[in-house]
Length: 102
Image (tube, rainbow, N blue to C red):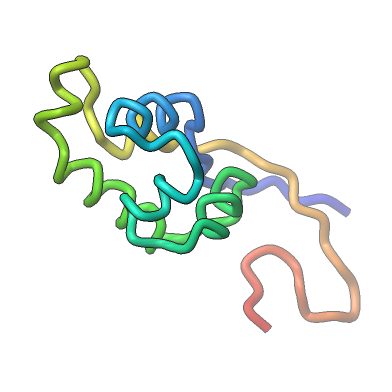
């Protein structure tokens, strides 16, 4: 049985534009800008990220706000992320499921 819930998704197109304006053309360069491991950037692009990634992304890009403003880009939550509805499958007998940390 599937359950519908809300999730946050990275707006990859906008993320790419902002990071490229700042000279980041590889995942490694993006990771360095954000202060994360390149694998974190890869996971984020697949939808697997948490509040730490969101905070680091917003802080890093806000720190370069003037450079981005020259291209009419605004590093805000609304520009870089979107709230979407997703379907999450329920697993029986594992104690897992959406939001479980066990």
